[in-house]
Image 1 (tube, rainbow, N blue to C red):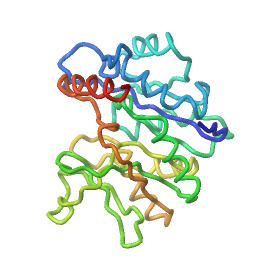
Image 2: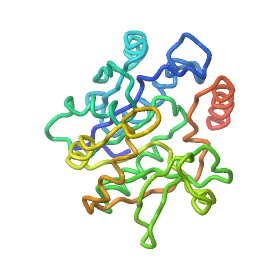
Image 3: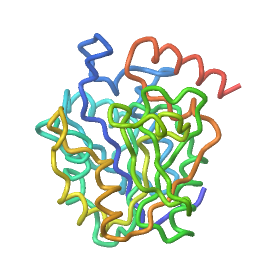
Length: 251
């Protein structure tokens, strides 16, 4: 694995995870004897070391930090109010070192993500000198996922949540994984322009895509082969599936 001295990683791990029907913070549920968030930290560590990994905590922050600290010592940012993914990333940005040029954003509830996949994303982002690179996946059944909308030159136009798509867009099988590479300066400017204009009144990180479009920045996607790897774990059934898949992955 290559080490990227101008890269920082932000891992989103502040959510409650109410669909788990458990008092435990979602990212603390275990896959193969380790909390989900630790798998994500360990996928990112080869590129930048723990001192450039920023974990955004919120719900049960002390428990999440104590669990991660048993293995690694990242930097923590505290999201006081759970106002969405855009707000979570914004919370972590002030902690980045001045030398950081590229920001990799990961989800703490995607425990099967592999370092090799992240390396492909980072390399694609840097080689193409993109402002934003979206990690996308091709799936047979895209129901429930945000669709990645491309133009005729394969530039990303937007990410549309399923509730907002039209019939033509519904047939798109290229979906958003929630994992991104950003140019740091672009991210800092664009994130200030996000507005909570949605039913949840939250600040969505995906809105940065359309903001960057209006700024005429280059936005691309890197498509991965194995959608199982980016499965988000939101329910106990998905936790069970993640445990089965990680055993298969390790054989």
